[in-house]
Length: 114
Length: 114
Image (cartoon, rainbow over all chains, first blue to last red; front, side, top):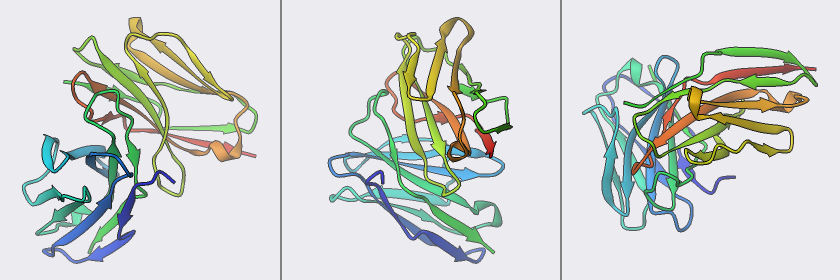
């Protein structure tokens, strides 16, 4: 158990809908990262927050947005969902923002868009 | 831009065989970190090792060993006397200086048969 929690574990929805994925980092970790794992794209970094502020952005679509709240939990919002958004979404956390920081991954949320 | 290549998509071995998973990376930075993660069938990502670019000493942890060679930009992972529980997808990843976000390879699926 990494100490990172993600809810829900599974999510099934329809095209055009909007969903919210939630992540609670390990106690004491200030950085939260979101990654998408799909068959064709592999594991891709989406976005990082550090202590409530956006820190880095990767291949995140404009239809996707995220935020980190004062209690450090984070939410990833996916809107106008398409079939291609079906994937495993991981949240990870780390103590800081340094390149040596080890990231601890949550169990993931499997999103299926029908 | 950074890139991680895991050329082996899938490897099948019989229990007790030794197996080496290859990882080749590209980066313009002189300071960077390399990681290996394991993703068992249950889906979570488990951290295995972190290595910084200034430490080329090989590392051994039980049946696992890592060979880092800057001259060939490789960070290979060897499992000695493989076991069925080693069956998983293994990911190599890179973080560049000043950034904690990870660039992952496509992963190598290892199947260990009894």
